Image (cartoon, rainbow, N blue to C red; front, side, top):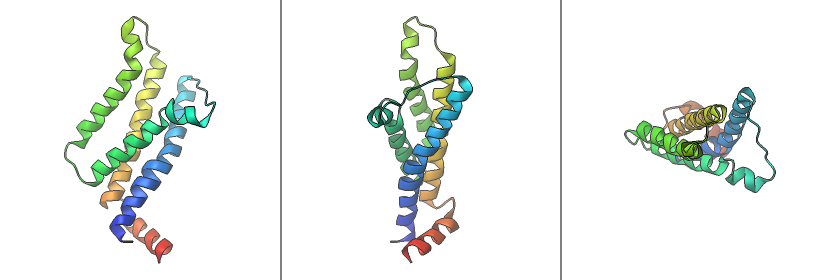
Length: 143
């Protein structure tokens, strides 16, 4: 396995997906505790689909690939995605209900945390971050 393919494997699978789920979940739980938001996690299927975990995995992988390939203006796309994603959360409030600003804040900050993980994963894929560490891991794991 070449260094480049190993970087992409680490960036997408390990950082954007596995670490991304763990770190995003911990970040969300911290924000929810700070803002006093309570959510149940009854089963794994609901956890993956209803709580945004699956969406987070897909968004982090997508943006990590885009950053890894060095696509121009990806920051604009990330901001647009955050706005679109959170608009669906705010839609009920446009129908006359007062927004729960604590939930809105948690949603926006959790999305920003997820985007930071995507940036790090993409920079690992492109070789801009942790290049020596990734090379050491590749040699240690693959010989």
